Image 1 (cartoon, rainbow, N blue to C red):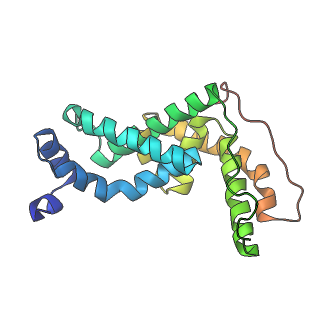
Image 2: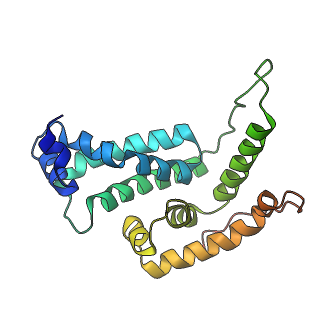
Image 3: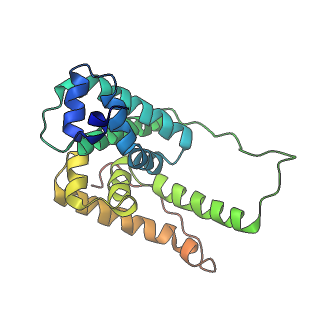
Length: 200
């Protein structure tokens, strides 16, 4: 790859892409794909859904690059596009719920005790996150899982910082009892109903 492309800033790459450079967008994706993938996966909790959402988001970003106004950092804009694609999928999934097929059947190799425990923790966390509204889940994933600041998360989500703080606080309050058994396997499991759309 051209060294000039590799050394260019995100904004320069986006502008080069909009100007017809065939390598610029690929370099931009290469730089940020791991964090974009992590946000999509944590927001949706399903690898196939996350992969589809990320593909949709990158295609949207590819097409919309010329309209980028520069009001925020390019990486913030990319994360916003990914989060929006994920939230669209969450809403569509809620409108058309499906039952997933089991991943393993008879004759599958036995898992080790550690692998089973790790999978159980992953499933518990995914189920707890899934019980949150899409908006609360997106906020807590960005701040608590991905480590973005409240200010960065507000830019990505296109909402006020106070709203991010409020959504994270409510999400943490909901997650704590649902994940109590994960931290303390001897404690009683508690599962509470998902938030209503009225809880902000």
